[in-house]
Length: 180
Image (cartoon, rainbow, N blue to C red; front, top):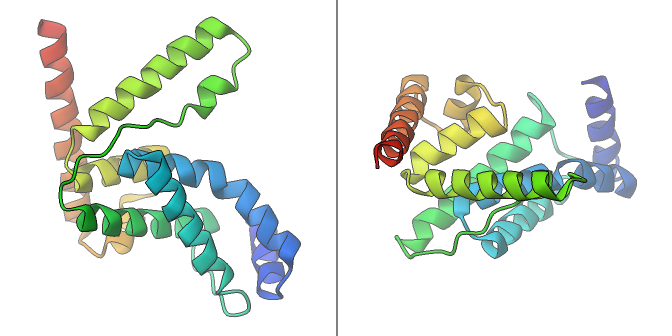
């Protein structure tokens, strides 16, 4: 936390190396979040870069309340939500970030992890955008329900309901597959 505050301080003093370290530290996770929420890698890359461009423009005036990870994740989620609203239900291609699978040295592990990541992305794609967003922010980005509620500008009860309904829908889908 102290190191993060120093990094933000350096960023506010217009240090390019501080911005570069922030970018390198968070880009992969933010891209994974964006891909999960948008289901289209190229759109997710655009969203992630838009967030970093906007963030870079705040150098000198940026004030951090909370964690940098939480702030950037919220920015990505908000932009992804805006993109999902603007696409008005258009179908998008399913593209999965499989970085964890790519990091394994064992080809069998890579194949299994890649298959699991693809299946998880398919299951999450079955959920309404708001439920998927809450589940991903809570489980993948480890944001609290309170942080998610603040980011989405809804009540904590709404966030908890979306989370519960999303998990229940995933259970129903998975139970239907097992029964077949």
